[in-house]
Length: 317
Ligand code: UDP
Ligand code: MG
Image (tube, rainbow, N blue to C red; front, side, top):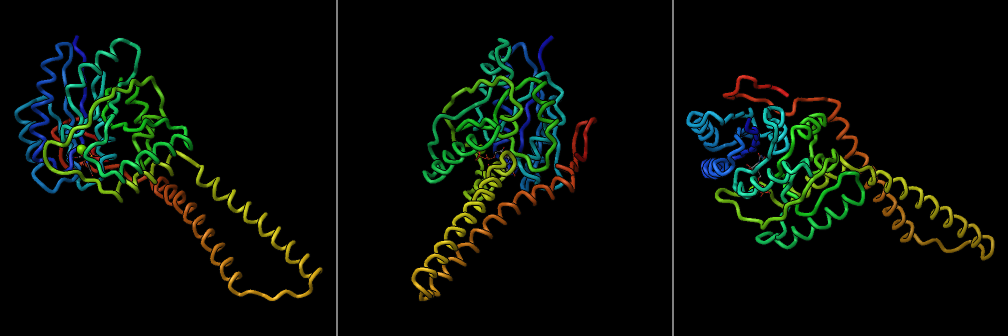
């Protein structure tokens, strides 16, 4: 019996790269005689002809299943939809732009088969072609989140990984609405081998991320996997209380020893704005967590599928 590998491919405006991707993956499949591939293409509300390309591919190749969202729900939702429809013994997540080289799959499969690992994940060792400021922020982010959360996230980790079915079930059990896959993969544990590889440019089309969307994604990651910002807010409050207590003591003693001091309005205004700023900052931090709770409580579907060629489609999840 050959093993079935389900390959999840989130696609947003990938009309130019999807065919190239399909070709490359098919070539890889030929080089792996003990495996069959199943392609789960998720169209995340593309504005171009991605859906048409998917329909054509599905007509030519019976191992292609496609799921088309009613609008753009984001890469995280697209990956989740893929995981919900995995039928294989193994699953892999891959970008459609060939930045996750399919050539790594045979080696990943071999490593999992050796029994030593439950998943093999790709880790890029260079950040060439990326603006230096982005790399700098990325490094700080990985350093920070590893210190303040349980999720073990490796610098340069991509979402590209091959994993056992057990891991897919664990991922599905994490049903939170605001998803941060790098954190989820790290949080569920399992034995993971990090396979280093050299970053490559995407084959066609362009990246959907800019600095701010990445920055916000990083904040989501922190809010979803760490309570440390809340602790910092409370400690800040405690510290300020202590400092103001000392200041009151100082003023009282000065009043008793030297009589009425000349009041300085400038210092008072500075103190008020300083404390006001800190209060707003802490409120903002609490607000971030509250917004996350609000979103989870509403329990809205992760995605809505408007079209698919698969019979067992879970249209709304
Ligand atoms: N993607 C998606 N929905 C989005 C944005 C991106 O499904 O809203 C997909 C995209 O089609 C690609 C993958 O996620 O297959 C990674 O996106 P991209 O290549 O733009 O990110 P980068 O590789 O630059 O980090
Ligand atoms: Mg890419």
